[in-house]
Image 1 (cartoon, helix red, strand yellow):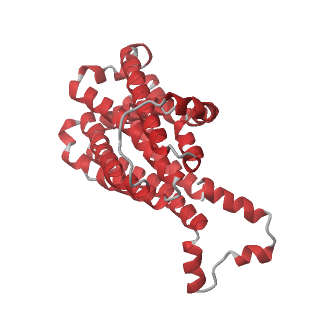
Image 2 (spheres, rainbow, N blue to C red):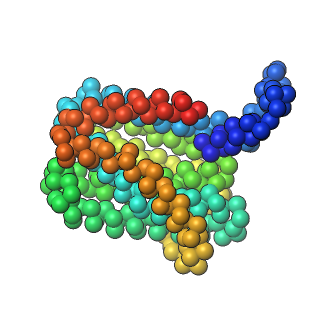
Image 3 (cartoon, rainbow, N blue to C red):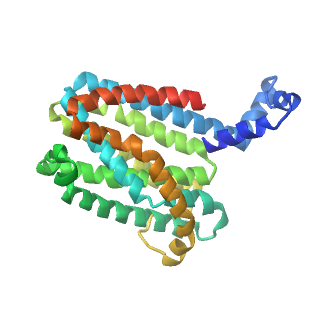
Length: 299
């Protein structure tokens, strides 16, 4: 999305002749246009953003048809809580990966340190949220009472935070086709899974996300990232020197990123606690439609 914005910004300062020159006029120019890394990565960013919105809407439509509204509302609140934890746990390191990837010789240590620190903070924040759940979200207290739902929630939250970092590695390496492929695999895996877990209710919806995230994360770790960095090996470690060097840049982006995404992620939680779980389900479907419309407008 950022690359697409840069292209549009540059075009504002071009005259009409220069803007027309950017439009391919025949097959040969089109092939050259699509081979240009700037345009190619921009189009993959557009495809990724659009596919995430569309597949997310389709997923919730399927779930809304198969599950009762109460289960859909509770699941949306639980998944929103996971997203909220992930937003706080990334510490802005997702931005630092993009910023410093091409400049460092110790990029493998940097990536492993970022993954390890984010994973550690995700676990810490998840534990804090679960301990204090009855004080700020009593409607979701059933999460702590269902062992399988609790385990699925913890696994999903940790994996989803790490899965999000993987996409930033592809952005940093300017291979957005891999990021698009990763998100496409996640969405295609996620869509049919609710069909097999209808009898499990809320657990079935959350488990669908958990299984899809786990499989996609493994594909990314074992196959996709080695395509970018052939010598890469996932080794848990915390390199203090690297983290101290990149954290100042991370922190400013971290604050702005959390503040920007907070309203979106907290809405299902507010609706579940103030109104009812069914209302959260209805809100989610409408919200998914607005996300698609907003994505098309940005594009």
